[in-house]
Length: 113
Image (cartoon, rainbow, N blue to C red):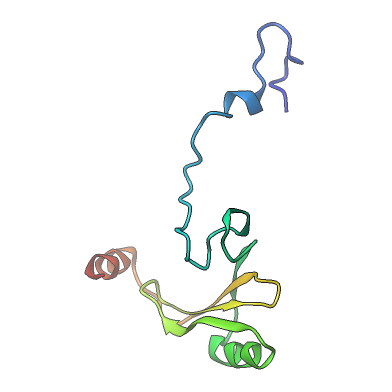
């Protein structure tokens, strides 16, 4: 990608300008199911999908040979979540909304640990 100068007149290519900047996204530690496969981890992609009922979905997925990494769990952010790994080693995070909570309540719940 170029900056619009066609590389002339002192133009800087965007890819070169950003080459030495650190990626701000944290890398999950080794052993974490979300650690990228290219780095020796267990997944190539993680998808988050909202569904009406994570419990029945988890049961169907397990019957279809998916690995349940986290059973359906009520989370601090007001959603029930299940984490599955399919036979291609992709991670799927399915969520069902379970309660409406304020931003202040989310902060309280995360501070409480």
